[in-house]
Image (cartoon, protein in one colour):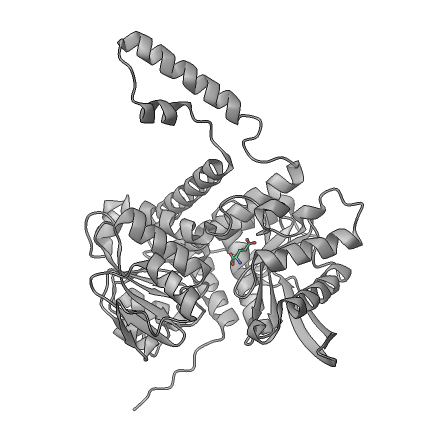
Length: 473
Ligand code: GLU
């Protein structure tokens, strides 16, 4: 018999997790309320003429917090977009920005649309029209609210949005900072596309640097040779799986997509699979793994690391008990429901929580925004200077030792950091520091044993400081 569980909505689930953390902290009720409440949600309905007929589209932009400005977060295009989801995701952005010390408030947007049903030109028209609505209502500008890509949107949509803003505000010198995740030749930053996947990799690497945490998850050693099941081969899942398998020796034993899953215990070559998907439109015919139609059942496959990188509410009270992994890294937002989180904790499964694990995207968005408002590419002033110092250092070392360096070592020492090097270094540092802060919180509170509660407590402590110090009016 199928059990039916009445689980809270995504937004209520996030709030319940936050309540759990606030209870541990003993936070003042007023401050707690101020932090949890969603500042404003805009719903727009706008007509667009498509193939001679008028269609009306519905979109949302929720600003969860404005204690830091601009408020930041992606815009999602999906046939299931709704206000509850947008508000839950906006709240997660508040906690996400705080945990990685990105000085922004939290926001999120959604447009109810199935992008596959429209041509490129139609998508441009719809996006520009939606952007116009957001700008007119004060929900998009470089200083107050800055969107970014999310599910169903990417560099293309961000370019259209930036261009629409520029036309409405030709006198705003910072117009290009009104969205992030733009193409590099249009004000974007190197490394933004893969940033969330890279961040997931850096989060896992940091986790595996702490042998007590690894032991806690009933594992030992490094990432090398660990088995991993991933759900979702979109931007985040693809990059995380690619980097982990190609650079850290992780074996991807299954890839779950919305219409089935691939299994190969020897490991799936992610780059080869991605090429296959691009050519054939799906995973079904990929020859080097077994295809199974019941994709979501594969979430229950035994593995060391389960990496959900698709949608929210994938591990629920219905399947949580059958999950057979040691560590879950939440590359998606909200893949584990509040009820499932409880069950998984009792089973001893460790969870690296979403607001930390997938914060790489917004972190690099922050770097992009800084690049935009400072009007200069990162590293432009120092690169040559650093390279010259490196060359000098190599010469001194060779003279002192009387030995010539290999070409490789000389190049490594004398190479000045370019934008991508700086982005990676900033992201790596951010992910390491945030994890260390979460660990300290967990270890200092006797009532906290999980990383999610520790993450929320760390994040809420930072946010509440700004409410308490600056006050509310
Ligand atoms: N959509 C991404 C997220 O959920 C990125 C947000 C951003 O870069 O502002 O974190």
